[in-house]
Length: 111
Image (tube, rainbow, N blue to C red; front, side, top):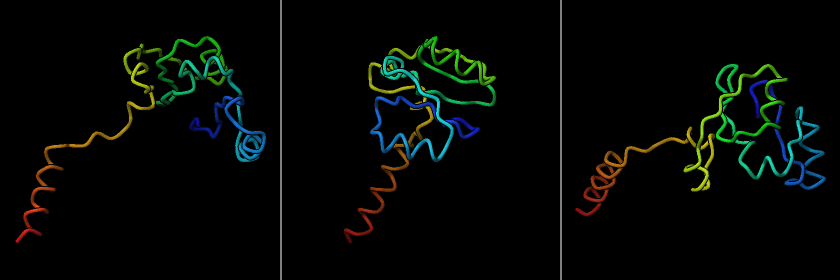
């Protein structure tokens, strides 16, 4: 979903009912299945820039028509692991702090 409320969607991934529901809720731009399978729908919007890990001409031209600046950053290793540009925004936990808190909680209940 772009900041303006427009969704980039692969119609082939949705049931007819889901497509109707989505189209009644927001503006939809359909993207090909091939582009979707290349992670082209997984973009990060930062102001007028769109960060993408896939060099999709189809999606880039659509985004540019919407006035967006497309920034391609190769994310081949992230894609191999099943991730995308949007995954780069996932929160990272401080495992040391979590481990200390868990240990303290266990000790407090053991007494």
